[in-house]
Image (cartoon, rainbow, N blue to C red):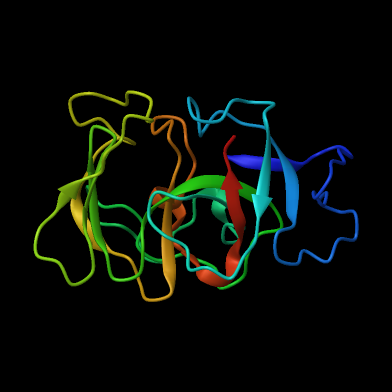
Amino acid sequence: MRVASAAPLLAAGLCVLGAGCEGGPGSARIFKVDAGAMEPTLQVGERVAVTSDSSTPHVDEIVVFHPPEGSAEQRCGRQPAKGEMCSQPAARKQAGVNIVSRIVAGPGDEIYMTDGHLFRKAAGHGSFVRELDPYIRPCGQGGSSPCSFPKPITVPAGHWFMVGDNRGESDDSRFWGPVPTSWLVGQVQLF
């Protein structure tokens, strides 16, 4: 889901995107959600605070990030096999837009999806576990695409796999691949 920078909203302790802020520890930027890919968690028109700190991203975190160039055309770096999500971005350059999604897998994790439910085998672990996903919108029962990708892929080192909560409507890593850590803008703070 793409997000637009918010109109000038100033509040104590907040730094607004595009206002020349330093973005130091504890600062936040405000973004406006402009698509339904994260529904029901985030609604179209909702404004969210995004903080950037030095902590390592983690699975289940909602973040704002830059997708790879070509994401609007759903370009994947390696043609996925039938039933497989995109495992490599086509571009080594980030697009000039911001998107908000949930991190569903990190470096070295293996993942697949059935009816919108993600199954992840964390790096160094032996079995797949279904994500706890009470936040997702129901998605294509019976193995329909884009809700089912039964063939596992591995997330490359230094990359994160992003998927929207509205799995049937989200344009995300399933179609254009994982994104490098350096393309993450910050963590969404839910209130």
